[in-house]
Length: 575
Image 1: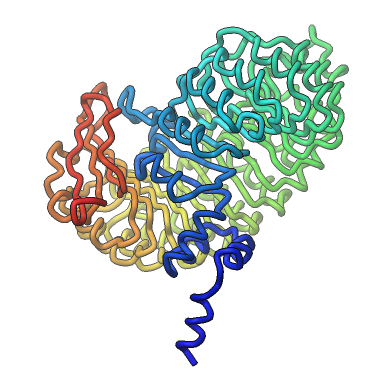
Image 2: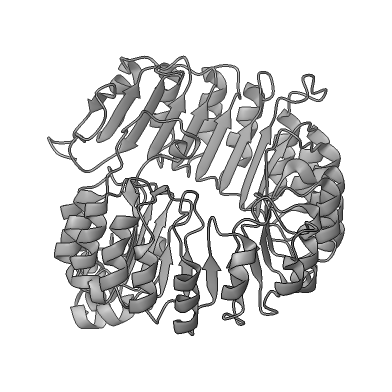
């Protein structure tokens, strides 16, 4: 009976298999199906519509187009996450050019392109605008990218006339004139999302923006940068159905000389609000009428006081996603815990003037029990508070705890037991960051991560552990771990080499700390095939770094001269 069943599967035609594959969208399921046999792999390559390249140096652009013939949606990630904190060497790499050339030649029907932490030049944007898919391109998302100017955006505005989403989210853009927005307003009437909430774009015509909003009847999300709220008012009057708004500068709101609060009426359809740059407490009066409808709120660029945070958050009963600075304090978190019962994502970032302790953490754990994502920059923390997170926030899949240096003597260190109980309670956790200080987490704490972090796929350790023994204990338990980032931990190369061998799913390792040498000898001796190892010496105040990743391509040649490629081990001559 078994041979017959196998035979039935074997004789399925490519056409029938294609129809089956079309119902499977999960990338992990697709990857598993492609391993069944050569036919299934071939059919997967012919039917796959979207793909994510988590590391642009892990595969050659030509290999992607050979494998997948009809991609419509591509997400490409360039530099490591450390680039967001200015921790990489200058001119480190991450250039999008070779990938964009391949996309232009291979995918005539590309609809969505998402570049993240990539170096994008004006010439690259010109290439996109002249590519065969320029007429079909609907989504262009440049997230945390750099290297281009507003001149590069001009051809995108002129020739990509089917764009529904244009986002420059958190990118670094050089302002060389506002013609790009003028052309976008004249040539596009299909935009649904426009995001240019980046610093430095000062040459923006309000008339052009108003024209664009008036022509794009389907616009539901608008996020702008350095535009005063008083100037934005006339634009908002033309967009009564906006659901997402990212405002510009709000520093003048509430000043006696300014009558803006009278003339600014936010859409009652708003469910997401961000920007609000430099908004003081006196500006809250324009938010109060829409606060009850808000599901997503980003306040990290405001100048609200702790009292202002409490006043606003007490009105946000429907809130699901919140980003703030730690200026809201323990009292603000207590208000959040009492009011925002639907909260699923919370990010509290660091500010010198802020202070959050274990009492605020406990308030969140007890009140916001639906959290899936939690990032907290705290000044003081206890094992009991972490245990409460594990007890109250059982749905967490992503948890990040960073201990600041404001309180010199944190009484309840190490946090071994707290980490243990947090992981034991949050059984669905796949991403975990714990950044403490010396003696904040011992080798026993790392062993707890290995014992209870079975589902972890991404782990970031900062100033954690005591020796290579702790790292080895962690590695033996975290068999699903794919990405490991380490800063200022007392581990040696031998310890990292052992961990690389033990964690069979590991694809990516980034280490910053003084114990990174320029030889990488232990990793070379113990690493598995196809491991690329890059070592950066300590320069310009940055400590040495080690970046290791598995790749199915040759060594990259676009790095700075200081960057040393230590090893590339091949299997049978090729990876």
